[in-house]
Amino acid sequence: MRRVVAGAFVSLDGVMQAPGGPEEDPSGGFKFGGWTVPYWDDAIGASLGEGFSQPFDLLLGRRTYDIFAAHWPHIETDPTKSTFDAVNAQVAETFNRATKYVATHAPETLTWKNTQWLGKDVADAVRALKKQEGPVLLVQGSSELLQTLLAHQLVDELRLLIYPVLLGRGKRLFGTDIAPGALKLTRSAAAPTGVVIATYERAGEVKSGSFALETPTEAELARRKTLTSGGERAGSARENGSPAVDTASGTPEKVTP
Image: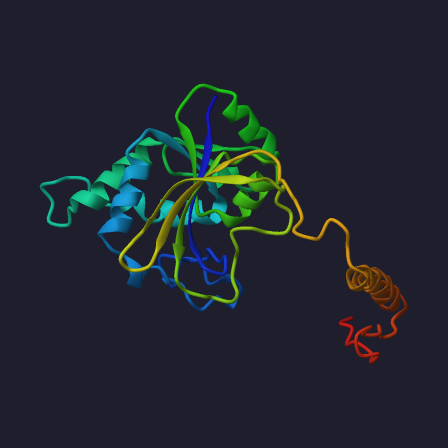
């Protein structure tokens, strides 16, 4: 069985868009492309190097595939050339050699060697890949593809680099349609620049509990009743187009259309 491992650079408020440069993905008016660059250090480089040191194939969304395909196949790998850089050459050779499985509506335009189309049903295709023998299936970036994989509980491990920056808007690591589940922190470290390097694995279903008193107070019972009736009135008000009432103050609440 193959495992799906998702690696992502993510801001403290959950944004993962365009971490490597302004031109990577300015869609939606995103203005902070390249937000990870000032935090680069040897600890982050070592973490990424370790992740790429084991055999893997790539699972990519179309936008990330295009970013990679416009870069890595063009890196010089001949050590006799003046533009040769050993670190970049090693990554380029690794990515060029790996099989790239890509989610796209235009499979005929996939030109990078060792690239395969995932097909029309991405979740089913990845499910089938996981049943095969082979190396880890590594997701890099690919926010839209990652939402699909998380929604279908196909991600086995998350390798996150969490940056001490708030971006406010942009494509996010976790959308609203992901499948609920518990996670287990298996590794963690902090880089000198403040980046938290954390690895999580799935750990079953979400468990819940309560810190409430075994016998609720009268005030607590009244609070719960207020929440229930207030929620019902607010929902009814929204359906009827009339303002809801703030039960604490008795004044109309602002209802967003």
